[in-house]
Image 1 (tube, rainbow over the protein chains, first blue to last red):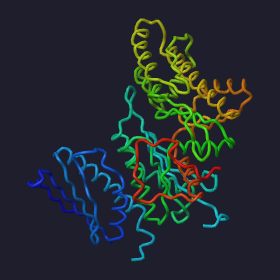
Image 2 (cartoon, rainbow over the protein chains, first blue to last red):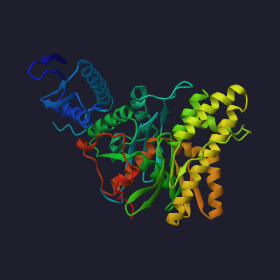
Image 3 (spheres, rainbow over the protein chains, first blue to last red):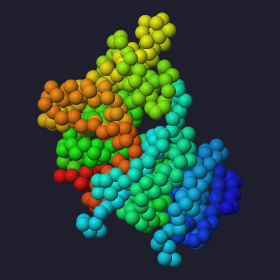
Image 4 (cartoon, each protein chain N blue to C red):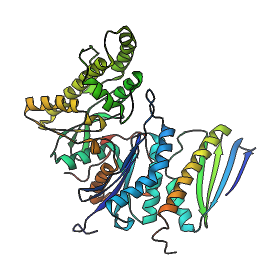
Amino acid sequence: MSTDGETDHKTGKLEFSLDVPFPSSSEASIALRSLSPDREPRRGGISKRLTVTGNTLSVRWSADEARILRVSVNSFLDHLSLVLETMETFGPPVDSGI
Amino acid sequence: MSSAAMTVVIGFEGSANKIGIGIIRDGEVLSNPRRTYITPPGQGFMPSDTARHHRAVILTVLKEALEQAGLKPADIDCVAYTKGPGMGAPLVTVALVARTVAQLWGKPLLGVNHCIGHIEMGRLITKANNPTVLYVSGGNTQVIAYSERRYRIFGETIDIAVGNCLDRFARVIKISNDPSPGYNIEQMAKKGSQYVELPYTVKGMDVSFSGILSYIEEAANKMLSSGQCTAEDLCFSLQETVFSMLVEITERAMAHCGSQEVLIVGGVGCNLRLQEMMGVMCQERGAKLFATDERFCIDNGAMIAQAGWEMFRSGQVTELEDSWITQRYRTDEVEVTWRD
């Protein structure tokens, strides 16, 4: 996993990015589709975007304040680890076909 | 999918402090393991701690559900989970696993309304035909009747659920939350001998409990220290008051609908005194009372599987993009496509 955090001086927002490699693109997509449906509990001040490129799940956050960013990233990492453990325990996907 | 073949649905539930996963095959409960997050006396359960509890055990409970049913993932036809209502963090934890296994196993996903899970499980177990439903738990208090493709809410609490009132009173008198605060209040109530008058707050078709809670919290502080009454007396008085209110609004709904059946669902439905009082009212009206035992009144996975089974067989499915959880989800928001 690689991460990066900095302040975008144009918008004044904090930007954070996370890249998670998976064994295959189908597994990265499964993680994406499990992790993307729920809205952020906090309405304002934070947004994130999930995408898959090849075998990698990428997440990009944009936040108004560091503490709001920390909470969201923390939650996401807990959720990601649950999805990963579920995939390890009950995977691999049946219809890998790929 | 042929109608002759059996339909097997797995259901995931974790909207409050119980995490349960159950498997149903055409009305037969094949497995229904569950774990409860119990806090020390005087404390309630908070969303992030509850989510952490569920996270720690969910995969184990899932394995148990499959093993106890003697099934493999390939045997499952549909994965159902609680979409809402309930506590956000625990709902997300459970939904994540449901979404992931649905994709891993290549099975359709179904987001279920928790209240409808209780109703459908009650209907399955008791075979009640078309009852007036009293749904009472720590999180919900509603009187529901089916009409034209909706479970309509005839009456409800205007503030807190009856179970919430009981649970919070249990914290004030610091009784154990094991197996549940309500159960321990029920046991103590049996030893009460003095009736302490409490506010009685029925508002037409609806009820209110937050005033009763404030009143009894203050009464507990004053009367227990002065020895005017015992904690058992207060437990007894609280039950008699709130249960009478529930019987009243249930009867009112029955009169409106011309109904001759009552079904009690939800964790508070386990309470034998509530069942007894409701039974007396039913007998007076020549109506029949239905209730389930703690396996099914208390939140469990099989009830979600059962509601999922009905929804799935009537052609409903939840797309992954639409599978977000929601803390608020009214019972009458769901189109009941499986009934006429």
